[in-house]
Amino acid sequence: MFSARVEPAWSLEAWRVAARAAWCANVAPDQVDWEGGAQGGLLATPEVTTLPAQREAPRVSSDFLALAGAVLCHRDPHRHGLLYRLLWRMGQGERGLLAHATDADVHRAGVLAKAVRRDSHKMKAFVRFREVPGEANAFVAWFEPEHHIVDRVAPFCARRFAGMRWAILTPYRSAHWDGDALAFGPGGVRADAPADDAREALWRTYYANIFNPARLNPTMMRSEMPQKYWKHLPEAALLPELLQSAGARVREMAERMPEAPRRRIPEAAPEPLLRADDSLDAVRAAAAACRRCELWQPATRTVFGEGPPDARIVLVGEQPGDEEDLSGRPFVGPAGKLLDRVLAELGIDRGALYLTNAVKHFRFEQRGKRRLHRNPTSSQVAACRPWLQQELARLDPQAIVCLGANAARAVLGGDFQLMAQRGQWRVMADGARALATVHPSWVLRQPDAKAREDAYALLRQDLALLVPKVRASA
Ligand code: URA
Image 1 (tube, helix red, strand yellow):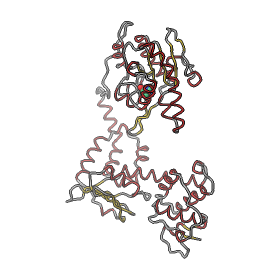
Image 2: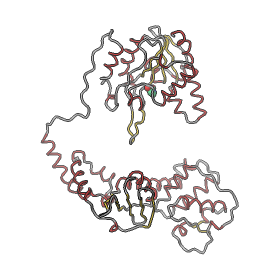
Image 3: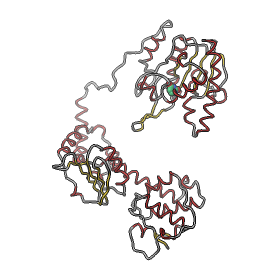
Image 4: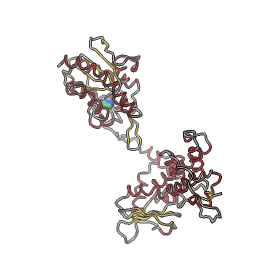
């Protein structure tokens, strides 16, 4: 047997040094006693770092290192050995091992990493600083994490509370930020942190006021804010009373009705009726008040088409993205930039084209601060189609290019198959020619540089079919 020492026990660097030494010395997992080493036990076995290397260090993926970094923060005394077993097995040829979620070792590592992530998340959410009496801008928080996560979470706190001087004390370790640098020290006891400060009284008053008894879901609340964290939260002292009185407060609120409900979004002027001879600008103004589907509500604005009213060529995209929604202009984000590049390479002046979308509101899913694009549903495309028809009727283009499957279906019919039918001119009922090609975002979404290059070439090849039309209309 050999022993392996990891100090501190959650350090990825320290574990890697020991694991590399054991691997290079060809020491099998069942020959290493990690637990004794990790706990600093005095074993009469040689340490792996003293053994001569017999082979090269193994190569490991960044996924494995990220997993190991999380697993090491768990308190499970077997975690070092578990990780070495995974390393050993991958080194012995089980290359795709981490993808096998049902493998006992992979599963166990996943469980430990998840617990650490959850604990870290709770620490970020529930650390509460108290001002140190008599010191300007100095704060101390007491926290009792389940796992060894202080080193993992402290950099987040340093970014988030960069302008304060603070310390976070836990039973096993403390982190200190002086406004410039992070430092770590030994653990403490709860009495080391101040008990209360004036801000807490203010915070409790605020919390009691924003607490909405009508939205109370105690089960959800307990799972999001488990009771074991309540001791860190100044507002927790209020919770039993707030929970108990919630029913009576809801009844009281109901009795105070009816007060006119406050609308989050002011009523827009109703969409005006359009006549056949109304201008494109009149259509644009009418579309700004569109409520034909639900997408108007979360979106910032209608993103209507843009370009000269006498443009002979129209490009139809799918729907505005994040940047288009904010700026109100089509194709100004990453997909628009890629489109600009293809057009420039082909010598086509974007300013001579009319650019619009099949759906004129941004459909997205909010994830934290990010708004992730979601494809519009077929009923949303159908609800928006009259606007596209009104645009095309005013413009009377000679050629229409549809970018992506949704645009193609909106213009060329619901059964249009993009990859099978792209790159061919078709004659529309009114005599205009229409062509469909891949969407620039699809090019950007390709998994690697080679696939992106190929997708770009496809888009360019299809858009090159526009060149004679552009010349003819110039
Ligand atoms: N994608 C589209 O389809 N349209 C835009 O305007 C931007 C991105």
